[in-house]
Image (tube, rainbow, N blue to C red):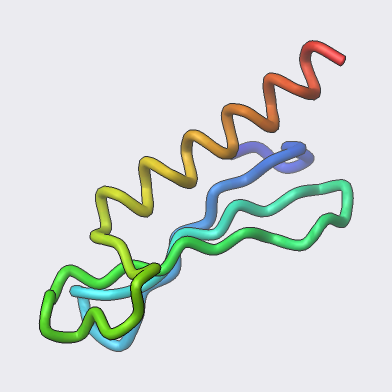
Length: 73
């Protein structure tokens, strides 16, 4: 990611290596979108909790869609 990117994907680690979040950040000031993940099934208490791979895929898809919107107004 270069400085000045319109959309960034920022990974965040949790308290251990098995949980965290992936943030999609927008340079235009819009609120970031975070996809929370936890690879331990026993800790997935909410219905919106994903695995690390799922969170990364969703964040990447959102970032690509937003970049496409900017490239094709």
